[in-house]
Image (cartoon, rainbow, N blue to C red):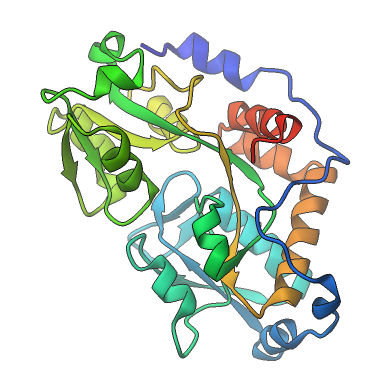
Length: 288
């Protein structure tokens, strides 16, 4: 079980500085092509940047009932807009339709943000920025049962009900690694922690960026494997190919946010100092 003292200790962990450390991007492009700026010119002429986001992923991207968005990724998007001197317009997307929406004709949005992990599969058909936040698969469970789960093998049992949202990497991970567990697919990601707390499922497959929020806001929940994620990766900004000028600008903004302390302050604001430390470790180890 994760206690409040342990959560406070994570928030007080010394932060390993990443100033001056170049983030390793999983997607490469020819910077000469970015000297022509058709995407940026289109956005500036429009006066707003269209941001695709799922709005179901606290504390990275969440849409309130009144239509307002908040979260770590939302603030990164606002920094990008500030660099362009334009406003932000958020366009809803979903995890199952994310790729199709990025590639849609006519174009639905300029970029997508909010809990999107950099993967080789995405880089084959789209562009992804440098990483700005560490990511890795972990679990949420009821605090009263946290001692049951010490490894992936403890999850992979028929009596363990594992709940995931459809169409994303959580479902993919569960299907590939939990072949004996009972997998339950629930449509709304933001509802799964409550369902686990209420006993409708035993475990939620989630990320080290999402789990701390729910542990801190619901004492019925725990993340016993938070410090031992099953995977290591980074979250970045996703967009369609042919937008190399926008990609270069986004990477510049991310590097500046690292060097001037803005990313550090966001990690602290959203209780992700632990994830911030892991980002530094992943970069140093070359495990992006």
